Amino acid sequence: MTRMTDVPSTAPRFTPSMIQSVATDAKPFAILTLGVERYEIADVMVDDEERLAFRPEGEDMWTALDRTIEDGWNRVGADIVASKPTALKAFLQTHAVRLSGNGVEDELEFDTLGTIWNVSLGSSGLAAVAFDDRAVVPVRYKDELPEDTRDKAIAILVKAIPDLREHFDEDIDLWAYRIASGVSILPVM
Image 1: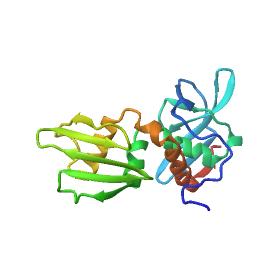
Image 2 (image 1 turned 180 degrees about the horizontal axis):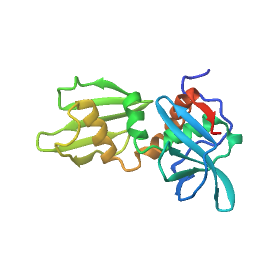
Image 3 (image 1 turned 90 degrees about the vertical axis):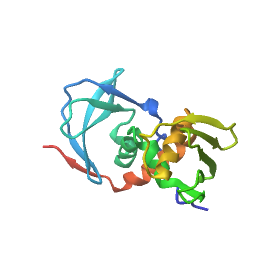
Image 4 (image 1 turned 120 degrees about the horizontal axis):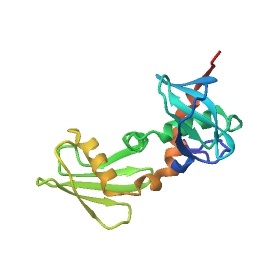
């Protein structure tokens, strides 16, 4: 049975270790567009191997991917999406389904692709996070968190579980690949 999260890709999935910042005077040969975001693409040498690198259009620093054109533009676009510092938060915002709590209550329970987690907000700036089958983690939070209770719960979860990204790595990669199915490429002349 095919699931919504299934992705027909033969290239290895993205892991954060597949990227590194590089200072180079590389010249872009393409513009990759994902929604409203545009990225310059260039070939760079990393450890004596030619790799693709990207940067937001007009910026100076390149980020090298452990990819070549043979991996396909969807795979390259997926790696760009997954490499963003905001990828984990965006993934959780689109995949955390609230099971209980109406946003005003102090306790919220979520299901994120089969992983059950909850956040109990205390009035003294202390929260308790239960994630999957792990022990409850206490978290001290500050008022500068988002006002929206759901967004606050996600921010507290991210703070409480240091290896959260690794827990969802495969799912984030598949989500990024689906987003990148809308990628467009223009050559730079």
